[in-house]
Length: 240
Figure (cartoon, rainbow, N blue to C red):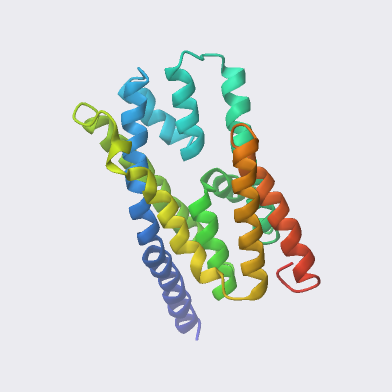
C-alpha cells in the first residue's frame, strides 16, 4: 500500500512538472528575443559582457534591466536614482505578490524568498491561470519560474555573443514579442462579464495615463484601478 502511494505521488509530481513545461513553452519563446535584446543593449551602453550577464543572473527583471541599462548608457551612474526608478517600475509586483500570498504564505520562508525572486509577469500569469484551472501547485510555479529564469539568462548570453553582429535588435520588431505573449495569456481569461469589464477599464486607464503621466506610472495606476473594480464587482466570491 505504501509503495503504491509512493508511486502515485511520484506520478503526480512528474505530471505537474510536465504540465508546467508544456504550458510555459509558448511564453519562453516570447522571452528569448527580449533576453537577446538585453544582452545587446548592455554592450551598447558600454557595459562589459560579464556585467550584462551578471545583471540578468542577479536582477532578473526585464523592464527594470532595460531601464537601468538605458540610464547607465546616458551617463546616469547614481545608484540611488537607478534603484528608485526600478523600484517604481516594479511596484506592480506588490499586487501580484498580494494575489499569490494566500497560497505562498504556507510555504517555508526560504522557498517563499526564492519564488519571490523568481516572480515575473509571465510566471505570475501562468501560475494564477493554473490556480483557476486546477489548484495551486508550488511545483508548477517553481518549474515555470526556473525555466523562465534559465531562458532569460541564456538569452542574455546569446545577446552578448551576437552583440557584434546586431546593432539595434528593435529594428527587427522584436519588441512586439512580449506584448503578443501576454495577449496569448490574457485572452483565454476573458471568459465572463467581470473579466471583460476589468480588462476594458485597465486598457482605457493605462492608455489615458500613458498620455498624461511620466514614466511607467500608467502601469501602477491601471493595476490599482482594475484591481479595485474587479474586487467590487466580484464581491464575496471566492476570487475577490
